[in-house]
Length: 530
Image (cartoon, rainbow, N blue to C red; front, side):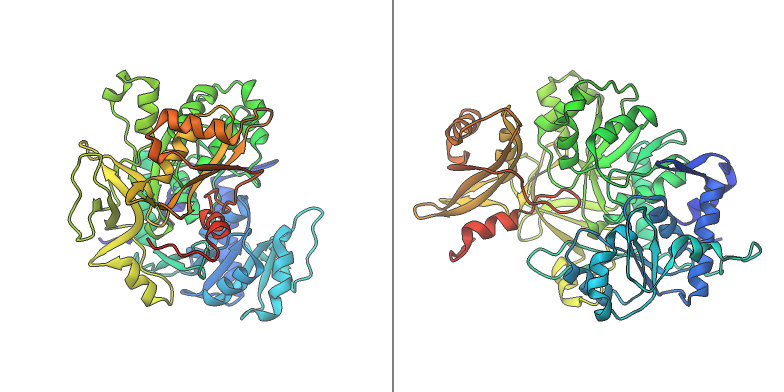
């Protein structure tokens, strides 16, 4: 009576109970669950006909379109492993990932074929399938996607495979920073339980309309690619994150749920159209990726009526391991207090396993909201390891616990709050200063659009905090004004000692600040001792 835990089974359920319901909306195209399943099945058969077998790796580089959704199901239901690629990385990283992952084929959007053409001769495979895009061209020896899945006899069946819940479902590569990207091995079981967390804690229901603002290549859309299908809800695809388009879609498609990094939230609240749009659906929005400032959460709720939900995780944990559960007792608190609570990462989810904050010796920190430690986790959603990298795996998983590298405190109610990444903590004159705490104050300044705080060398203190900020359009501010604002709103020793005003901050494709790029500018030739 044993049945393997795999999110692929939810496609079967959706077709069984919601065959005529709209499953996917992609601009002017839409598909029922029956139609969507048929397209995914034809992809499976086409892949099998092309020689793809159970355990083979198929890379996919597509934006948030129905083709990407079809790939998740079409590839994985024949026991093959999907390798989702970030289409914004460098050609060199693409070459590394495609070869390191042992991919046998690449399914790619025509808009993103130029870098692939650059590295084509260096790849260890020669099978390409291209999704055509109006106005784009490619020079690859590739099959057209629609032809690829269209030349399938009506009576053809999807090859039957016995799925082991512990076998790989996807191989997801982390963003390369100062080292090569690492391939995170995620299983059917881990994806299933993470998606169950997504459904339960984000309250996904049959009548939800989910907007894919979050890149599906990023930790499998945090599990949304599976969870929305499981509930029989509707996927709304979004090729590019364009704030005015998103604001229009809220009403046009009656969006009720979405996910995105704090950067996306910031883009929405600072879009001029946000001042005039009327959003009646009050969408729920889960945010994660970097600690969101309380001021940003409050503004999103006040201006757009978004019900902000804070989650936390990493690609290595499928990704969810903490969720900010809202309690009725919080309702009586002030707006500022509520926003501050919502900025915490929260408590364990129901299906992920155990997460806690520990000291260097592995013992748990006091639940006092003050003692700093590292977040560690173990259980159902932790990766199988880094692909072909036992050394890095052993560094990350020690004594049965995955070490996140995030420094946090635990409050008396058990809620965890990140104070910084271990590498981002500023140690000035022996005092620990949280860069995220300073950023939280900066976001309260009316002229600050975006902010990043890093340590810079200092002869007296070793290092001191420096703020790099992007200002709101038509809202000027000087360096000294911003420094004084921080000194007025936090302990003086924590306030930035200098401020640089820039046009833009470096970010990953999913909106995370790339602080290492900022640090490189100021630490070249200097030695960081901590």
